[in-house]
Amino acid sequence: MPALPAPSPSFAPRPPEPLSARQKAAIIARLLLSEGAPLRLRDLPDEHQVALTQEMGRMRLIDRETMLSVVVEFAAHVEAVGVSFAGGLEAALQAVDGHVSDQALNRLRRSAGLRETTDPWQVIADMTPEALVSVLQDESPEVCAILLSKLPVARAANMLGRLQGDRARRIAYAVSQTGSVAPDTVERVGQSLVSQLTARPVTAFASPPVDRVGAILNATTGTLRDDLLRGLEETDQGFAEQVRKVIFTFAHIPARIAPRDVPKISRAVDQTVLVTALAGAGPREAEAAEFILANISQRLAGTLRDEMEGLGRVRDKDAEAAMGTVVAAIRDLEAAGEITFQIDEEED
Image 1 (cartoon, rainbow, N blue to C red):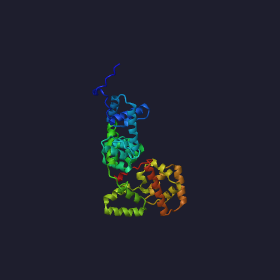
Image 2 (image 1 turned 90 degrees about the vertical axis):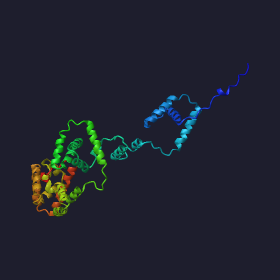
Image 3 (image 1 turned 45 degrees about the vertical axis):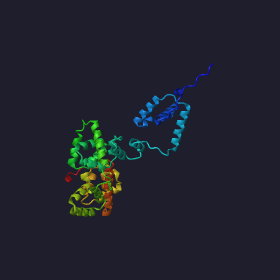
Image 4 (image 1 turned 30 degrees about the vertical axis):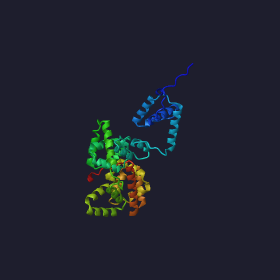
């Protein structure tokens, strides 16, 4: 049998072309999937997922030697990587989610034009009372009505009680008009309020100057308080008037506390302290002492009166300390939403 002629150069097998990075990625992905390894392709950008899947659909048989070469190259690349960052702000936000505040997370998302993922109303509910009061004072009654409607009832009542009478009444009426508000409107209002509140500059003090001065004067003696207020009025009458409105002392109890809340106060204060405060009440505090006794059970009031008589004359220092303790207990109840300060109409 004659020997076959050697193939012509035009029919000689060509060496394989070098694989592209996309083809190598397709080989690794196919190998991992065939071995049942977890492969979170959904974490890739959509365009990369599409390109990789298309490449896997175009490829056919890959010889063992080529596959091993790609695997060795891939393993060497992985071993050489010290740390890997997922690309894009979206991936970075997912990585830090749970480790930074919701306000910071949403601010980053807004700066990149991304949709906020956290519930804006939960962010608002976690804000300080001072921040929420500033919204209730500045925004339209309709926006304020939506805000109050999204807060827990006790906290909404607390916030409303911090406003002046006419403003509080307008907002309360606006709440009655929220029955037909659409859910997407509520969502937009929430997002807008979060943007507004988180964009405000960070200040050194959590509360405004009026509240801080009021808190300081609340802790002073009545004589010193009156003297300081007179000095403030001479310097800045408007500021002094605002301070007077935030001051709450034992004498303010009848004007600022609802009769139904008095039993809560009597339970929150040690009876010995309450007896000392009532017995030591001077002319300025006498009305408050009678207000407390008139709005608790007759049995408890009788017991307190008997103890007041047995106590005799109370030193001014002890009386002021006891009344200060009662006031502190009332403020704690108010901060916890257990009671709500009433609006003193004479101050409006």
